[in-house]
Image (cartoon, rainbow, N blue to C red):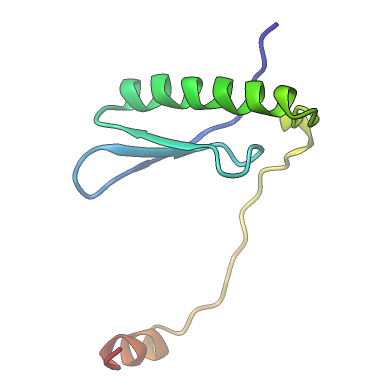
Length: 87
């Protein structure tokens, strides 16, 4: 049986990639290349699904996920002032 999940890849500052699967909370990985990150997330998904079955949990269904974009008003002046406040 093959399961299909959406994965989000993000380029890291160091040149590698971080990747996560929104339908599987906590299922994350990384790799030096896009190909390595993809291979690593496949393995992480397999482990996640095996663990879910072992613990009698339902296999999450990616088809219930809906992709969208949200526009958020953002005041750059406030952000710049916040960045200047020492923590």
